[in-house]
View 1 (cartoon, one colour):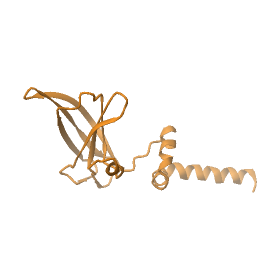
View 2: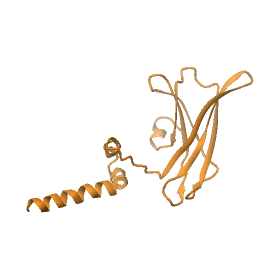
View 3: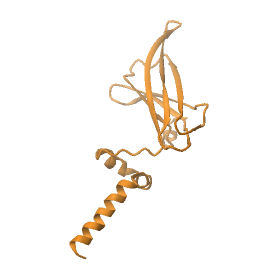
View 4: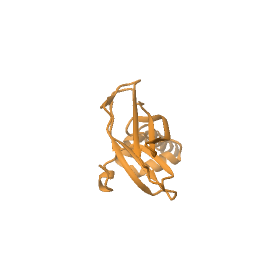
Length: 145
């Protein structure tokens, strides 16, 4: 093979990896970090969070954590909405408390938003960070429901 042919084959391979990166990450999940590092994140769920707001309010003289926001369809096709996972983390980034929520709307159509709101009464005092994400099957192994 000459140099031009080798370059063409390598170029085609790089193009294919970029163009079909979601399929590559589905087949080899460890490649997600590589694509993210290269500035090409991969969204396998075809959903994104928007307008997430975290606040506290006092109810019956006790603190209540309020998390609300929206989920949008970025796939331009109907997408099922998985359970949501809310996590309270401490200053070291360790999970202190987590809970799940199921939205009433099971499918999100293109251009639609699904709003969510959840409350946690008496949040853990050591909580320093809140994470909002979609439930993953690995959450079952860690005790998530």
